[in-house]
Length: 235
Image (cartoon, rainbow, N blue to C red; front, side, top):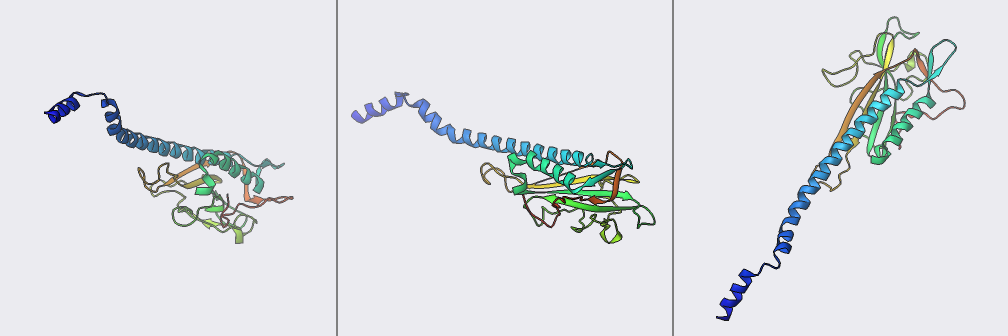
Protein backbone atom coordinates (compact mmCIF):
# COMPACT_ATOMS: atom_id res chain seq x y z
CA UNK A 1 0.00 0.00 0.00
CA UNK A 2 2.73 2.41 0.93
CA UNK A 3 4.58 1.57 -2.27
CA UNK A 4 1.43 2.24 -4.29
CA UNK A 5 1.01 5.66 -2.65
CA UNK A 6 4.67 6.47 -3.27
CA UNK A 7 4.46 5.61 -6.96
CA UNK A 8 1.25 7.59 -7.29
CA UNK A 9 2.88 10.60 -5.65
CA UNK A 10 5.88 10.39 -7.97
CA UNK A 11 3.60 10.21 -10.99
CA UNK A 12 1.84 13.40 -9.97
CA UNK A 13 5.04 15.26 -9.03
CA UNK A 14 6.06 17.75 -11.79
CA UNK A 15 8.41 19.95 -9.76
CA UNK A 16 11.55 18.80 -11.68
CA UNK A 17 10.02 18.70 -15.14
CA UNK A 18 11.79 21.82 -16.46
CA UNK A 19 15.15 20.64 -15.19
CA UNK A 20 14.64 17.24 -16.79
CA UNK A 21 13.64 18.77 -20.12
CA UNK A 22 16.67 21.05 -19.99
CA UNK A 23 18.98 18.11 -19.29
CA UNK A 24 17.54 16.14 -22.22
CA UNK A 25 17.56 18.95 -24.79
CA UNK A 26 20.83 20.73 -23.92
CA UNK A 27 23.10 18.29 -25.79
CA UNK A 28 20.99 18.63 -28.93
CA UNK A 29 20.92 22.42 -28.69
CA UNK A 30 24.69 22.54 -28.18
CA UNK A 31 25.24 20.19 -31.11
CA UNK A 32 23.07 22.18 -33.52
CA UNK A 33 24.42 25.49 -32.24
CA UNK A 34 28.04 24.39 -32.55
CA UNK A 35 27.44 23.14 -36.08
CA UNK A 36 25.90 26.49 -37.03
CA UNK A 37 28.80 28.42 -35.51
CA UNK A 38 31.36 26.26 -37.35
CA UNK A 39 29.62 26.67 -40.70
CA UNK A 40 29.32 30.42 -40.17
CA UNK A 41 33.01 30.67 -39.37
CA UNK A 42 33.88 28.62 -42.44
CA UNK A 43 31.77 30.88 -44.66
CA UNK A 44 33.32 34.01 -43.14
CA UNK A 45 36.83 32.63 -43.59
CA UNK A 46 36.12 31.86 -47.24
CA UNK A 47 34.93 35.44 -47.72
CA UNK A 48 38.03 36.87 -46.05
CA UNK A 49 40.47 34.79 -48.12
CA UNK A 50 38.59 35.70 -51.30
CA UNK A 51 38.75 39.40 -50.49
CA UNK A 52 42.46 39.25 -49.62
CA UNK A 53 43.18 37.63 -53.01
CA UNK A 54 41.19 40.30 -54.85
CA UNK A 55 42.77 43.17 -52.92
CA UNK A 56 46.29 41.87 -53.43
CA UNK A 57 45.81 41.48 -57.19
CA UNK A 58 44.29 44.96 -57.36
CA UNK A 59 47.06 46.60 -55.34
CA UNK A 60 49.83 44.84 -57.28
CA UNK A 61 48.32 46.05 -60.55
CA UNK A 62 48.65 49.69 -59.44
CA UNK A 63 51.98 50.09 -57.62
CA UNK A 64 55.29 51.31 -59.00
CA UNK A 65 57.52 54.34 -59.46
CA UNK A 66 56.81 56.59 -62.44
CA UNK A 67 59.92 57.42 -64.45
CA UNK A 68 60.73 60.26 -66.83
CA UNK A 69 59.89 57.94 -69.74
CA UNK A 70 56.23 57.90 -68.63
CA UNK A 71 56.57 54.22 -67.73
CA UNK A 72 56.20 52.81 -64.24
CA UNK A 73 59.03 50.83 -62.72
CA UNK A 74 57.99 48.07 -60.35
CA UNK A 75 60.42 47.69 -57.43
CA UNK A 76 60.95 44.91 -54.91
CA UNK A 77 59.91 47.35 -52.20
CA UNK A 78 56.58 47.89 -53.98
CA UNK A 79 55.96 44.14 -54.12
CA UNK A 80 56.89 43.80 -50.45
CA UNK A 81 54.43 46.56 -49.57
CA UNK A 82 51.45 44.88 -51.23
CA UNK A 83 52.39 41.52 -49.71
CA UNK A 84 52.62 43.18 -46.31
CA UNK A 85 49.12 44.58 -46.84
CA UNK A 86 47.85 41.05 -47.51
CA UNK A 87 49.67 39.79 -44.42
CA UNK A 88 48.07 42.43 -42.22
CA UNK A 89 44.65 41.93 -43.78
CA UNK A 90 44.90 38.21 -43.02
CA UNK A 91 46.31 38.56 -39.51
CA UNK A 92 42.93 37.76 -37.94
CA UNK A 93 43.05 34.24 -39.41
CA UNK A 94 46.86 33.86 -39.21
CA UNK A 95 46.98 33.70 -43.00
CA UNK A 96 50.74 33.47 -43.40
CA UNK A 97 51.09 30.92 -40.58
CA UNK A 98 48.49 28.51 -41.97
CA UNK A 99 48.59 29.42 -45.65
CA UNK A 100 50.56 30.38 -48.72
CA UNK A 101 50.14 33.50 -50.88
CA UNK A 102 51.58 33.49 -54.40
CA UNK A 103 51.78 36.59 -56.61
CA UNK A 104 52.69 36.01 -60.27
CA UNK A 105 53.32 38.46 -63.08
CA UNK A 106 51.79 36.99 -66.24
CA UNK A 107 53.03 39.08 -69.14
CA UNK A 108 52.45 39.07 -72.90
CA UNK A 109 55.18 41.37 -74.13
CA UNK A 110 58.17 41.37 -76.43
CA UNK A 111 61.31 41.74 -74.36
CA UNK A 112 64.58 43.02 -75.81
CA UNK A 113 65.72 39.42 -76.30
CA UNK A 114 62.47 38.25 -77.96
CA UNK A 115 61.75 38.20 -81.69
CA UNK A 116 57.98 38.19 -81.06
CA UNK A 117 55.73 38.76 -78.04
CA UNK A 118 55.81 35.86 -75.55
CA UNK A 119 53.31 35.12 -72.80
CA UNK A 120 55.22 34.04 -69.73
CA UNK A 121 55.27 34.01 -65.96
CA UNK A 122 58.02 36.57 -65.68
CA UNK A 123 58.41 36.46 -61.91
CA UNK A 124 56.72 35.25 -58.72
CA UNK A 125 56.78 36.39 -55.11
CA UNK A 126 55.36 34.56 -52.09
CA UNK A 127 54.66 34.73 -48.38
CA UNK A 128 53.45 32.07 -45.94
CA UNK A 129 54.82 29.06 -44.08
CA UNK A 130 52.78 26.28 -45.70
CA UNK A 131 54.40 24.21 -48.44
CA UNK A 132 53.89 21.10 -50.50
CA UNK A 133 50.89 19.71 -52.33
CA UNK A 134 47.85 21.91 -51.92
CA UNK A 135 49.83 25.01 -50.99
CA UNK A 136 52.49 25.62 -53.65
CA UNK A 137 51.22 26.95 -56.98
CA UNK A 138 49.38 24.56 -59.28
CA UNK A 139 49.22 27.05 -62.17
CA UNK A 140 52.90 27.36 -63.05
CA UNK A 141 56.14 28.31 -61.35
CA UNK A 142 59.36 30.05 -62.23
CA UNK A 143 62.79 30.42 -60.67
CA UNK A 144 63.56 32.68 -57.72
CA UNK A 145 65.87 34.79 -59.92
CA UNK A 146 63.45 35.20 -62.84
CA UNK A 147 62.73 38.82 -63.64
CA UNK A 148 65.60 40.21 -61.58
CA UNK A 149 67.81 40.97 -64.61
CA UNK A 150 66.66 42.10 -68.05
CA UNK A 151 68.35 39.30 -69.99
CA UNK A 152 67.12 36.05 -71.53
CA UNK A 153 68.63 33.96 -68.73
CA UNK A 154 66.09 35.52 -66.33
CA UNK A 155 63.11 35.51 -68.69
CA UNK A 156 60.84 33.33 -66.55
CA UNK A 157 58.61 30.45 -67.65
CA UNK A 158 56.57 30.34 -70.84
CA UNK A 159 52.82 30.09 -70.23
CA UNK A 160 51.24 30.17 -73.71
CA UNK A 161 47.82 29.12 -72.41
CA UNK A 162 47.78 31.54 -69.49
CA UNK A 163 47.11 30.70 -65.84
CA UNK A 164 44.13 29.31 -63.97
CA UNK A 165 41.86 26.29 -63.88
CA UNK A 166 41.07 24.36 -67.06
CA UNK A 167 38.40 26.15 -69.12
CA UNK A 168 38.79 29.24 -66.91
CA UNK A 169 42.34 30.30 -67.73
CA UNK A 170 43.22 33.98 -67.95
CA UNK A 171 45.68 35.48 -70.42
CA UNK A 172 47.52 38.77 -70.41
CA UNK A 173 46.54 41.42 -72.96
CA UNK A 174 48.91 41.91 -75.87
CA UNK A 175 51.72 44.24 -74.88
CA UNK A 176 50.71 44.20 -71.23
CA UNK A 177 50.47 42.00 -68.16
CA UNK A 178 48.28 40.99 -65.28
CA UNK A 179 48.81 40.21 -61.62
CA UNK A 180 47.68 36.69 -60.78
CA UNK A 181 47.15 35.78 -57.11
CA UNK A 182 46.71 32.33 -55.64
CA UNK A 183 45.98 31.76 -51.96
CA UNK A 184 45.82 28.37 -50.24
CA UNK A 185 44.85 28.39 -46.57
CA UNK A 186 44.37 25.56 -44.08
CA UNK A 187 41.05 26.25 -42.38
CA UNK A 188 41.34 26.46 -38.59
CA UNK A 189 38.36 24.58 -37.14
CA UNK A 190 36.67 25.95 -34.04
CA UNK A 191 35.67 22.50 -32.76
CA UNK A 192 38.34 20.27 -34.23
CA UNK A 193 36.96 17.75 -36.73
CA UNK A 194 33.63 17.36 -34.91
CA UNK A 195 31.58 19.20 -37.54
CA UNK A 196 33.90 19.96 -40.46
CA UNK A 197 36.85 17.88 -41.61
CA UNK A 198 40.25 19.22 -42.61
CA UNK A 199 39.81 21.77 -45.43
CA UNK A 200 42.13 23.82 -47.59
CA UNK A 201 40.51 27.06 -48.74
CA UNK A 202 41.65 27.99 -52.24
CA UNK A 203 41.06 31.25 -54.11
CA UNK A 204 42.56 32.96 -57.13
CA UNK A 205 42.21 36.49 -58.47
CA UNK A 206 43.71 38.53 -61.29
CA UNK A 207 43.80 42.18 -62.36
CA UNK A 208 45.23 43.70 -65.53
CA UNK A 209 48.09 46.11 -64.83
CA UNK A 210 46.55 49.59 -64.74
CA UNK A 211 49.47 51.74 -65.92
CA UNK A 212 52.17 51.66 -68.58
CA UNK A 213 54.56 49.39 -66.70
CA UNK A 214 58.19 48.70 -67.50
CA UNK A 215 58.14 44.90 -67.86
CA UNK A 216 61.86 44.41 -68.41
CA UNK A 217 62.53 43.43 -64.77
CA UNK A 218 61.72 44.10 -61.12
CA UNK A 219 64.00 46.93 -60.07
CA UNK A 220 65.77 46.93 -56.73
CA UNK A 221 67.62 50.22 -56.28
CA UNK A 222 69.83 50.97 -53.30
CA UNK A 223 69.14 50.43 -50.46
CA UNK A 224 68.09 47.06 -51.86
CA UNK A 225 64.98 45.42 -50.43
CA UNK A 226 64.80 41.73 -49.52
CA UNK A 227 63.13 39.71 -52.24
CA UNK A 228 60.05 37.70 -51.18
CA UNK A 229 60.94 34.87 -53.53
CA UNK A 230 59.00 31.61 -53.52
CA UNK A 231 61.90 29.49 -52.29
CA UNK A 232 61.45 31.20 -48.92
CA UNK A 233 58.75 30.08 -46.48
CA UNK A 234 58.19 32.77 -43.89
CA UNK A 235 55.41 34.73 -42.25
